[in-house]
Image (cartoon, one colour):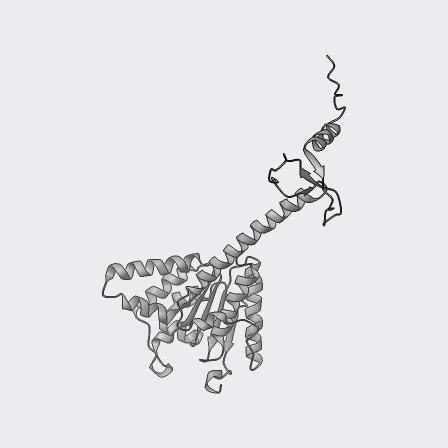
Length: 285
C-alpha cells in the first residue's frame, strides 16, 4: 500500500528527515563557529525544553564544558584537602607555614647553596624520588624557612596532589607529655600523630634536638625521647622527609645514638645543607 512517503535511502537522509520534523533553524547563528543553531519545535504556548544547539560544535562544546567544570571542582576539592592537611601541622608558629622560596633571601654562600639543595630536593621528589633532606647549624639561620618553602613548593607544583606536613619535634614531645597522666589518651594521641606522620607524602621534622636545652647543657636524650624519634624515623623510612636541627652530626649521634643517626642519614646523599657561618638573622632584624 502506498503512503505517499518515500523511505529514506540512507541513514543520513533519515536523520535529516527527523531534524526537519522535530527541529527548526533559529535566526541567530552559532557564536562559536557561525553554523546553524537548531531548536525544538514546541507546541504553541509550551516552554522551550532547552536552549538552541549547534549541530557542528554545540554538543562537543557542552561535553568539553562539563568536563572542564568537573575537573575544576575536583582540583578545588583536592587543593582544599591538601591545604587543610598542611594547616593541621604541629608547629608553634603557624605563620611559618606560609614561607616560600620567593621570600627566602640568602645572606651568604652557604645560604644560597642550601636554597639550591632545597630546590633540587623538591624537583626530585616531584619526579618520584624519596630522599631525606637534612639541614643543620645555627639557630635563626633560615633552616625552617627553607623547609617550609620546600613543602609549599612540592604541594603547589604537584597541583595539590601531594600531602605535606610539618611537625615541630619539641611541640610533639610537649603534646605527648601533656597526656602523660592519662595512658589511654597518650596512646591515642601518639597513634593519631603516627598515622599522619606515616601517610604524609612529604614530612618536615623540625628542630630535632631543641628539647635537649642549650649547647652547654646538652646531654643524651632520654630513653623515651629516643624511642619516640626512632618510631618516627621507622615510619619515614624510604619516604621523602626533611629534618632540621641545631645540632651537628656528631652531637646528634651523641644525643640519640648510632641507630638514630644511621636512619636519619638514609637516602640523604646530596641532600645535606650546613649553616656553619650564618648568624641568627632574627637577632639583627
